[in-house]
Length: 397
Image 1: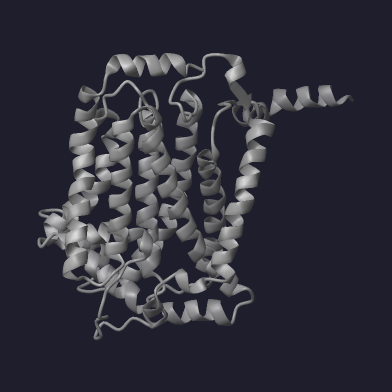
Image 2: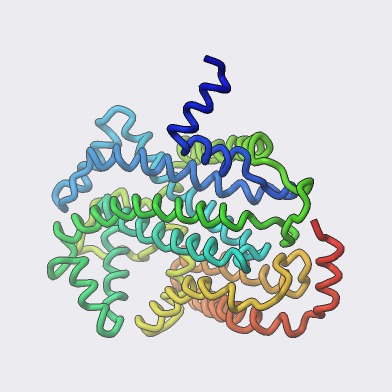
């Protein structure tokens, strides 16, 4: 039997193979994509490492306050290659958030949230929220000193929410304080959320393949010569980027393991001893800075959560006909200010609370909200639509 007849026999009985080839190998991609589009592949590979290493860790983990910390210590010290698997998991969380933040920043800069890609943007933000939820639940599980007190801060802030806050915190705790029931529920939440993330990733990719990817110009390719098949062109490009990404990943695991978590989290949780400075992991620092910037617990919680929820409305807040900030000078500078505000919030949230960092947090929070609520809606009215149209005609693909 010839290879062609074998392929036809398989395709007629297993059409998924042909669909995979059509949707991935032969999928038309704009030929002008830069390396910022590699971060989707980085996220996929990192998520794979997290799920596989997480299953291994779950097999050896004991979700009780008497055994949680010691079971993690056993994984690190007694189980063959346990230290590597745990470092792979912890480093993977940092790499996942770093790639996710850059992925979102790229989408904001090049206008990938605009029509017809609103669903791609929304599913991506749902993925961000699920990753944050899974990371928070996973951070509690080692039952270290910072894990315990970080969870305590979040639960106390949650209680400030009218009507829903107290029932939700009571459900999470399952008792009067953080204990066995709460730890077991965080373990289940962490495990279930991880598989929910896989489902959202599938939905995110499916919506992307319906409308196609954006590109740096923000202009849809209208000619066949303006596109390339995904394979071999972008598989090769993604492969090169992945090599560099995995080198950084390996360097973090083998040479900079102290960056993966705070030193106080290597001490077993003690409810009677409050740490001098309660700090979150770096990927939660911007939101923690917003939480601390407001004297009111409820106000801080609303602003911290609202800083993410604002992103869901971006496609409708920005009414400009031009997608990419490359062709919008005012937008480009304003957006750089928003990125700087987010970075400053990250630094402020990872530092002890002082008067200087407090005012930096407040200024950065004000600018972050001003960008989305004032700059995005008002800037298209200031821009010259005729000039924007000429730019679009000049750069038509």
